[in-house]
Image 1 (cartoon, each protein chain N blue to C red):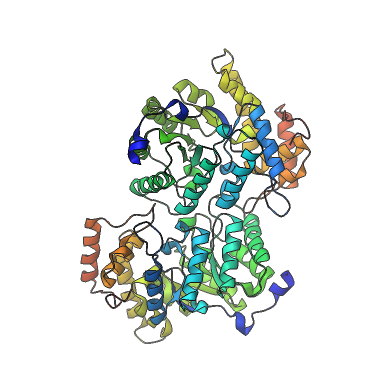
Image 2 (cartoon, rainbow over the protein chains, first blue to last red; image 1 turned 90 degrees about the horizontal axis):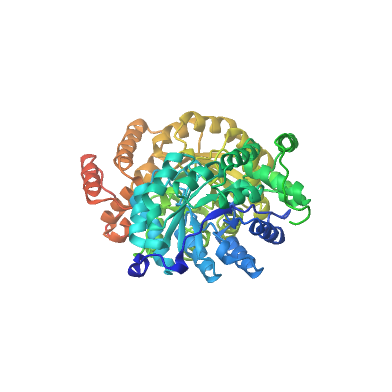
Amino acid sequence: MTAAFAKGASPANQAMKGVLSPVLTPFHADLSVEKDLLTAQCRWLLNCNVGLAVFGTNSEGNSLSAAERADLVQHLVGQGIDASRMMPGTGGCALPDVVSLTQSCLRAGVKDVLVLPPFYYKGVSDEGLFAFFSEVIERVGDSALRMYLYHIPPVSQVGLSLDLIDRLLTRYGSVIAGAKDSGGQWDNTAAMIERFSARGFAVFAGSENFLMRTLRAGGAGCISATANVNPAAIASLCSNWQVPDADAQQQRLDTVRAVFAALPMIAAMKTAVAHASGKADWKRLRPPLVSLNAAQEAQLLAAMKDAGFAMSQPKGSA
Amino acid sequence: MTAAFAKGASPANQAMKGVLSPVLTPFHADLSVEKDLLTAQCRWLLNCNVGLAVFGTNSEGNSLSAAERADLVQHLVGQGIDASRMMPGTGGCALPDVVSLTQSCLRAGVKDVLVLPPFYYKGVSDEGLFAFFSEVIERVGDSALRMYLYHIPPVSQVGLSLDLIDRLLTRYGSVIAGAKDSGGQWDNTAAMIERFSARGFAVFAGSENFLMRTLRAGGAGCISATANVNPAAIASLCSNWQVPDADAQQQRLDTVRAVFAALPMIAAMKTAVAHASGKADWKRLRPPLVSLNAAQEAQLLAAMKDAGFAMSQPKGSA
């Protein structure tokens, strides 16, 4: 099997690029996923030219069981959501969960997956992380797989070193399709791009704050939470990053992001979507995360107004 | 349902005490759990008067899926392992997994469970953690449940404050049966005992290093990894802690623990069990954890010899 993985990228095996969003996950009062709202949010993002990194950190992806995630992928594809624009998070701490969920994605026609390192144990070795990703790839056993490595040490507390990425790329070729770097350290993102992009490895910044720097350095784009609320502007700059006013556009994106980053961000984005769509259910989060309180909600709405930002999502569309 | 939880502890609802061990989990070459070896290790620990905190941190519990853990509980009980001596780890990041696994335990006759806070998101609020534990208890919906809260911030990076414990105890009474404190800060363990033990809350130290201090302060005992390799001595001191040479016995326990703590501890304990039992499969870990290398194994065996420590497990018993 390893031999099959080691060949170069075929045209059918190109890495993704552009802007993706860890799609926010709406919940019913009983905390089950509100599939219709999720599907509508996915449709709207695709219409804004934003891809679907469902089950990311800002999707509360790890608050969903592997079985729930597998069911949602199948549901979304069944609703006509383009599988080639999806990059579900399939990471977890238990190897069997990661393998079975990744296999479910492939069965549904979704080849691109974003995979966290196992994040319970801290201070683990590159040898152990290599063994984990290697077991996932070998057990999934499908050379169509395109795995993106998810580096987010501020949350996972377990990072992915450049040497680990190199070793995985050398062993598994284009199956190791790229990475999302949410470490917030530009030097690391730049080093990923410099060291691996010539091998077809797509580097996504973890926030649109780094969008212009990533594109100018030769990266693939960004996978950004705030693309849930400001998708069109982020996607437009990514598609037209060589325009003369690109830096001014970047500044504008940063201003909008700062409005959400000043508050618990997932709850703030959900509140904004709730207001834009008229669907109050969007305000709900799964524990341990909590909704904005009334003061925070007022602060958010005031800050959006001060920033001259209103969500472009048509009222009621989601 | 809440009303039923709020009543006091009944005789059938007493908290556990004594020594428990996060039972090491043996794996076949394909990384599936080697059930026969696990069952044998459980029997041996029970014979040494050590209870079974299966699926703890040192059991690689979070490297097992919820479905695997549910299956193993059923298997162990089916093999005649005493359900009243088990305290499985049922924690995880996704509420549905924690609920279904805890329900599976209760169906198998296992009422005591050790529950981590959800550990993916960091810096979460007490409000969010209360909501998480509350949802688990309410959804499980069985007042026979005895939940032990697992405080292990060095690994989970999400701790359980005294105020959170107070709030849970006030709301759910004896369903909140106790805690394991693996924070390594004696002051916190002492505060847990002082504040909550009068309410029937059983406080277990997370290591036998704190055994005498815990018992003298009125705590319930310890749940310790190294009880996998040194069970009889730890359990004996716990049962006879008022003997004149208790402090000397405590020092001896500390010396033995230090042998294992000087190396990656889970791998070191598994290596010791492999040698004592003659079953090399015990050396295997699930990624991201790795086995000792040859130099580490030699270091371990030399340190055990220097400490005059040999596992008492009869060769071949596991």
